[in-house]
Length: 319
Ligand SMILES: [Zn+2]
Ligand SMILES: [Zn+2]
Image (cartoon, rainbow, N blue to C red; front, side, top):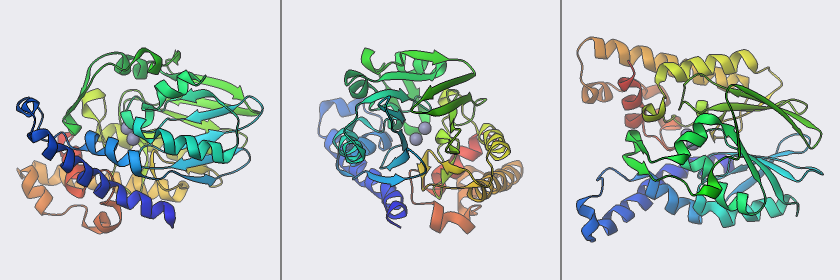
């Protein structure tokens, strides 16, 4: 499948592009202050500038855009387009082209599933183009201030004023647009402390944000409230919510369903158990990585944003 292929090349693109950026940075005097491991964010910015964004029709008036950054859901109708998430900022020409491919209507509303740059990168240009922005209040908080993500070795400056959500909520929020009811729910801290799910009720499409990654190991952002236990808890909530008929949109990876969500839950729980047991025996992170606790899924799941080593490191930190 095309979408699988694009998901699988994303990590290689990130690393290749990031390595290039890091090499260039070494020639500049500022390299003295640069963070040597700061590869993923620059790589993502580079990769998204060239990677194509594909459109996949879902049900009723819903489509998903698949690119390097977070998956975007598009809801169309007489109220104008509503988007869930906004990709990496450099993906703008590709996102614009994909949106124009669907129809000529303007984007009137944007919902952010959480604050990360690969979901909010388009906030400013979409807001300038006329979209209001809705998010959980911690998304506004993190975008409004300098925020360090240790897992990416990257410090984000405060976002420009136009990128800050115009409306925020704490726990739950329901809205209506294009003959569709959207039910938004805040998770307890999981991938970050700002994660929400978006359920398009009539179409029965459920966007999990980055609490679910399908056929790619997830990233867990401990710097802004995430943890492996929070990810497992959010996945249990997702499984209790999702039915067999629902289409499940992960934050990253291919469009999924309940059985894939259940597989992901078992993957998180199993990895947590194995890593925790080895850590309890006194094994170091390097020793645990060498023991290959994720061997069964590495070939399929280890080629996205996070390598097996990255994912094991994220789990190790929280057990
Ligand atoms: Zn993401
Ligand atoms: Zn994220």
